[in-house]
Length: 557
Image 1: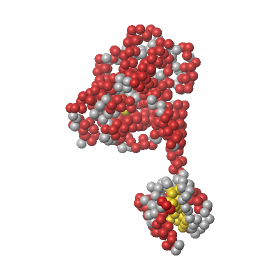
Image 2 (image 1 turned 135 degrees about the horizontal axis):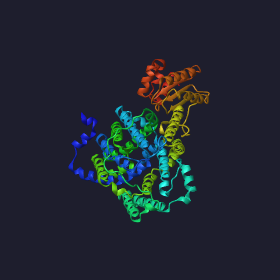
Image 3 (image 1 turned 90 degrees about the horizontal axis):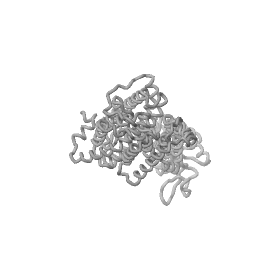
Image 4 (image 1 turned 30 degrees about the vertical axis):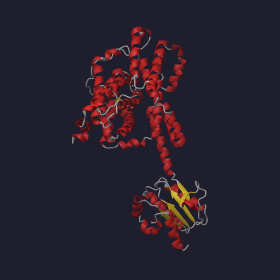
């Protein structure tokens, strides 16, 4: 019974000793990668660096127990961090006690939302976020994240919060750049890029962190204006209760909903990719429950919102992780770091953390995707562009909402105009095809054949009526109309009534309708509307040829 609710019982019961070495090594490699990343992402979220390490402990262990992906690495990620910062910074100053308190409350809200969605099996809601919206949003967020780190790379305090204003302010203050900070940041960025391209199996961030700390310590670069992390609190996060305030909950709810959906999308997409490669299945509802519990419980241990990481999950998988124990091992290594090794990060320069963030996210800017979308389906490409521009100009929360609204409007627009094509007969192939694509297809001046390639409902049946009327009016000798329903998957009550009106209208003009290729579930709807009694043989033909034979028999052609 417990196995149904706690997936870890299942994999622990079947755990093989041969798995341990791989899980141990994968956990260690991910921990090495996560330590500098966690601190950098916490800084990106406007939080003390140590909170990034806290977020990599308890939440990761909770997910490993309740999640269904064997290799998904749950913890702090750049995208969620920038949404946390952009949302909460409007309510309190980053880094303050009030700010941290609001972030903990936000994490609790995210956890409760995700848990509730998983418990009620409502994960399908995220399917309404199209790939074009997600890609455009993530690309814009990556640009925003990169620009937010300019001040750390340049060594100046930039007050603007809009990327365009950040760029303008940075240009106007080039004479204030701290050369030491700038050189250290640029060299770190170049090293990270080179490691990522030529030595992908070597933990570049850790190498850069160690080298930069040595350089700062030996050269005492903090005396030249290089900002360092300083004292990182030693020890494990204490248990505390988020300060639940109704006004704060209302203000944080839109941000919580945004992160809940985006975090789940990021996790489930990566989880599915790895699961397909490993030939196992993940349960979306249980994934929501696992992420929800990780966030909800993590909020009581000084963490901040977490989700599955693309990069660390890929490393975890490529490093040979076999089970969720690898994530537990990663968390244990982070705990050991918190207990004994935080002093090592005293001389870590913030410009290096900024470089780590920029290199980590620049790959998320997917220009190839928008080019592909514009080539294949222009409307999807424009959805990407609208989401991208909206996110850059009005912010991450409203950017994705704008993209969603635009994609839904285009979806409604497309569904409001059902595709209706006229068919003609190709003799040598003995088939009926769209005459606009096959000009050689023959038509009969007395028989109009059309195919409807859309489900019919109240929003599009009026346009269907217009198209049918236009086609009939184009052929003055029309006596029979055959409508191919093979592309119709559903018909609602309003559409059924409207179709009856169309048939009745043209019957008065001595034009008879035949509807063929009706699917069984569509026929069930039509039977309930008493179409069998009303139209009999005119709706029972399975093919266009049968309808034509019926016409010949009825009219002795």
